[in-house]
Image 1 (tube, helix red, strand yellow):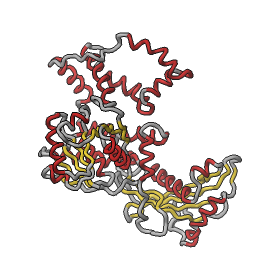
Image 2 (tube, helix red, strand yellow):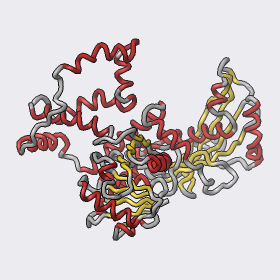
Image 3 (tube, one colour):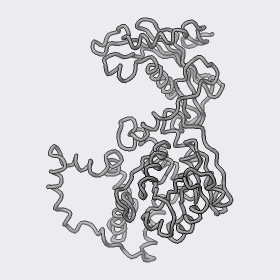
Image 4 (tube, helix red, strand yellow):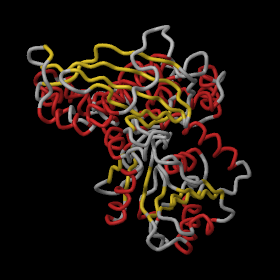
Length: 474
């Protein structure tokens, strides 16, 4: 699959990174002489953060080319994303050239944050609004507006690259999300202008309070809880009258006088001017990764999109060395797994081994349904050997050998690979348990059959290092 990105700014570069890291080839066209440098910096941040969301490896990265012309970029493209500045006459010019040169079957999306499809297509272009949110390579939301058939096709492709397409029922200026942002922005400008709060104090009010709730519940679900046991109806009855009180100035905008611009810019510089833009982006991305992973674990908000995308990722093609052992982990080492020495922290070797154990349990039938039925395995002992360093961005592959698997005991030997280099081993002893009695028990028929499928592992040579204690040789 090929995507053509027209305009390589903050949004266009984010689109390019999202497609590339999900296996698409990308052609980028931007006449800016700094476009290649800027794209390289955006892509470096994306490579650092997007794979950290997942516990499985993303597809092999696509090929990036910098096209010399728009026509060269869109040739053979399945998706064309226009991400030029928000000037309607410029968008008309670019979209007309896209219409004249792109394949007729291409999906053509505009990253516009405000224009309606009817405005974009007024001069004959065939496109939809596909409005993402920065950083595009991490945040899943894309607002789709326009012709139904193209929106439907677009939604299907976007889900495959881990995004959440939200198709609007009707076109409207600024779509859905930016209308909320505009309302908050207007009020924030007045608070600064009137001397009620600084830019930093307004940001603190958001990130220390309702911003945390919105990330998992949005607006209406948050207010439903605020209504207590009586729910939304009670909340509306209690707080609805406040909407008539003169609390906000949503329909008024302060004049952008030089004095106001200086005031806001000065406060913003004092707040975070000591940090470079790339430093701020990396901080933002690391925090988003942690928050999104927490939401994935809890099955809330944007975390559900990540979980669905991860489940749909293709399984590993095979182990790097030993072809007759299953690959139980295949992922990149995230930045958050490294320590002050620059290599993977010891606790995350254990985490990787735990993930491998969980995957092997699934392979033999001890999956979520089996556990819900009242049976599982409990780990009773682990032994780790650290043989080589792993660094952020390294591809970590784990192969698993069952070295004991009859009766109540399950003994696994995980080999952790960096390419063809053996980085670590972890031996795990597990005991099958009846969750009702909390006592050891024989595996049920499903797992017994699953164990039998791997009986050939028991005939293999015992792995080097198996059965060792700390300090033992051999």
